Image (cartoon, rainbow, N blue to C red; front, side, top):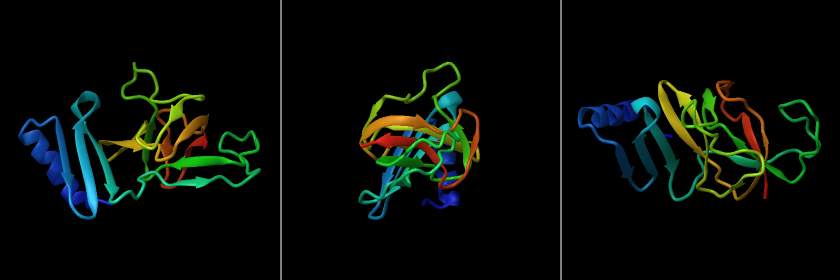
Length: 153
């Protein structure tokens, strides 16, 4: 994960030079910063070669889901929050959600934003499949590792 001081320097560099996008890579990490909703930078950071930002693990079969319906989740893969922050399902309040139940996703599909420290972070699916459940409502606080979506591969 990128050092927060480095991230602040990148955002400052973007603002000072009126950049709309910044893409940096080294041997271990890739960081992309884009101006997002309301001019606020959106950051995507991932370890290289392909370590996922959103950790996807098979859900425990028969475990109760976050929405409390207790439905069987065998065979579903969870997309989890890589950080503490506020979940946003769409790029702005008037836009359609990035994904809905039934939407097909691949590893590069943006599924939501998580705002942390005034920075909107794009969360990628990191899995291929179909969205079966959205477990969080837009505007809700999320924890590190909290399941956001369930995907059927």
